[in-house]
Length: 222
Image (cartoon, rainbow, N blue to C red; front, top):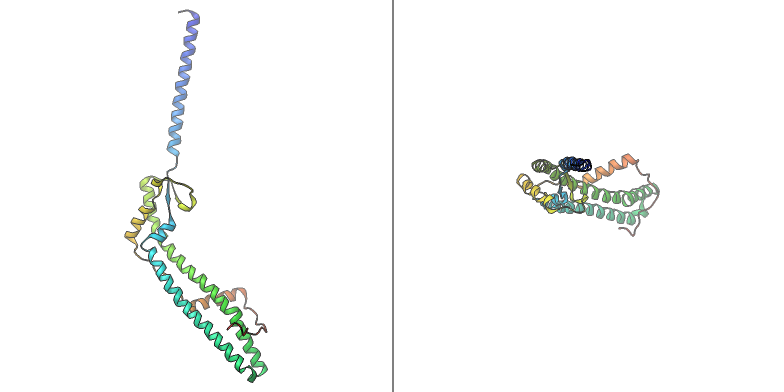
């Protein structure tokens, strides 16, 4: 073989060896990357709360609680209305001191206490519903972990944080099936007007009791 042919053969061997080495390194890199690729699962926590057996018991309880507390609140408003009417009928017979004090008390109830109680009533109601929902999610946590471990997943994301996911990555129905075996109902804490008044008093204490002004109760707001 000529010297030129030997040199060409040697160069070809080097090129082939380099290509083979590169392929080996590339294959190893791809394998390493594949080994580190996260396995992501999706769960719809809103569906867990809304579609679970326990979650379905929340709305009827919440409706009953809200209806009852609204009745108490309506009675309180009706009592204030009658007190204003009685004041208007008897104001001319009161002393100046008694009339001013009565006006201030009625104004406080009408313009401050009643609206504040209505606002706090809604806040307290929403809070007890959220607490009940949180109990369901808390009960589902071990189930989710077991599914993640079984599938060898590295991440579990809530559906609300994902724009698109392949259907096979969604484990919501699997979680629901297991949750329904463990939890059939959840209690929504009952709320009364007394609870609302207590919260209102605590809020007033934190902010400082509102000063009693000379504003008179609005006869149009009965």
